[in-house]
Image (cartoon, rainbow, N blue to C red):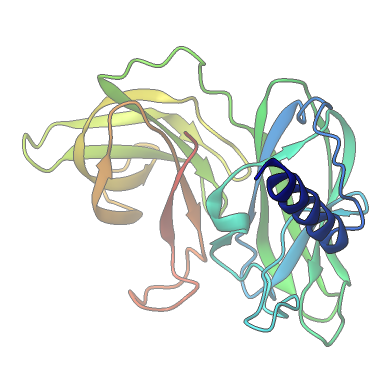
Length: 256
């Protein structure tokens, strides 16, 4: 019995080795010291794969197993909205065209320094120039506190609309009708501080300084206790359609 068991274990090990040319993996190295998310909010921009220097951080697999030519499209967040681990240091980040035409052409280059133990969000933003094949972009730190009060949520506002004036995000509880400002005015490429918000369902609105009129609205957004959220604006402020892809819109992405 022992002889057969030993032989079976040997054959199983041999089969695993045959499946992987690197059968012995090194898992002793430390994980990356920071985290980053990637947003494609470049108006009319093509789908892209995101890179940090020459390292690809986002891509989409097709049903055939090959890399999709779709990439992260406008309004999308790379890697399903999850953070990617990244080593500390200085980088040139880029969004490179995922389609077969102009494949891997960089349409943006954003420089930034990644610090140990911190998290970041990188945005393609602005209007895509189809002639120059370029689009704007920026990076912000996701500086929420590690000490989380699990009785409430934390929310901030990021302004990624190039033709917007500075705006303040307001959250109105759909049950109590209590409305609170989420920080102060935030200009294009800016990010407000994370603000504690009682958990519940909220109607979200942005307003410019001194105005009572809502500039951008989104109804019935749930904030779960212990979670951290970024509400990011995207789109073109001149669009009045309520269904157009490039209309002003408030995106809700979970940071934690």
